[in-house]
Amino acid sequence: MTTAVLIIDVQQALCSGKYEVFESKRVIACINHVSRMAREAGALIVIIQHESQGGGPLDSATAGESPRLS
Image 1: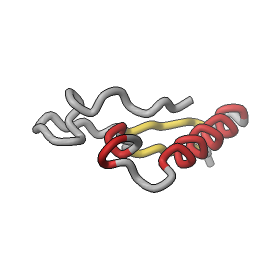
Image 2: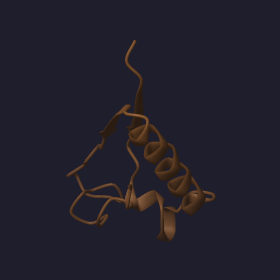
Image 3: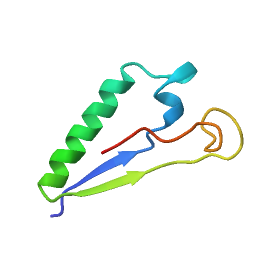
């Protein structure tokens, strides 16, 4: 069996500003920690990012860069 870490839809608009979710910086730090450990163990890391282009806070043109994942 292959082991993988799946990271789904970490949105910049939800990590800072008006729509920031509870403890977003801690969540990003945990994602980075888990993915770093998995990478060191040779596991596959898959990141899926939704991008909207219809306006609004999740629009890729207005939301800014995605959170820095390592």
